[in-house]
Length: 386
Image (cartoon, rainbow, N blue to C red):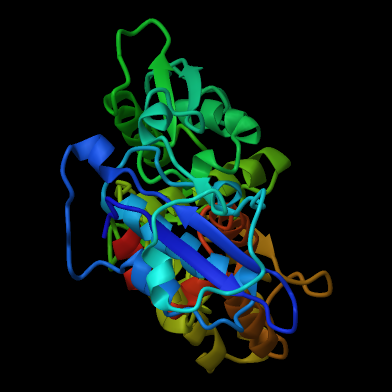
């Protein structure tokens, strides 16, 4: 809960090492004018009092930072999430090496032997020093103004500016950037940011950017996932990798802020983003004819001459519909190499998005701890983002 009074953090090092005391202040009354006590919320005072004297300072600071982040995020203070540098304690100008004799010293009034860390939330709210401010030109979806690689779309312009974004700005609990659309009278009090996110999601799914493709079932108008998108396996250029990383940043921001993205990605994409491996069932989820076609080749009882007469190329259609050569040794499928063809075809389709998924997860790692995503299923990750 928010602490309207002082709360003192204290820990000591044994064997003659000096004691450290630091006072933290939380100024919730300065914002709301009244305390907002919620009994189920973790209490910073309880966390500090429960710290063992033998705990390392770094571990104690980790508890404090976690508590502060929870308090700031849950009280919806825009831009008030403190970076780690602000939570790190400052050396006290003077201190006593003796530990306090009882717990009452923890709540003692401030004196000259204690150092204070106060956060002026109002100064941080207006203006917010970590919120990035940018101007973008809106490229209407019809007219080809977004460029061949989508670099002139809102998504592309924001992606180009990501290198200038500080790490603290990506950790804000709400609006990560302020947006002004050139030539439009949008005054960003949250609306411009929300509109930019909505515009980006629309561009990703209407073909203005080369990152997403429709599922094969969508193209064939049959099967499941006919309204979903996949990562494009053909988007391999450096500019595409940068865009996929920015897409990952957007997913991480959605998880951190709780602001959903209007993205309709297919279930296999979410599974891979969560660190799960794809299965044959996942291939059928987005391309229902792929596995039956391979089984027809594998189990066909045609003779060797009949196989050669069919003249089947040793290629596999990718998710985007392009024919991919699977081997430099074989040009056509024969009775002798058909088992190898089936194995190579399935292996390609199971891993054709690996490069793109790795780039997206790299971008997510700038905002959220990606290794922890393995604790979730693909569906749970989709629920957090969308």
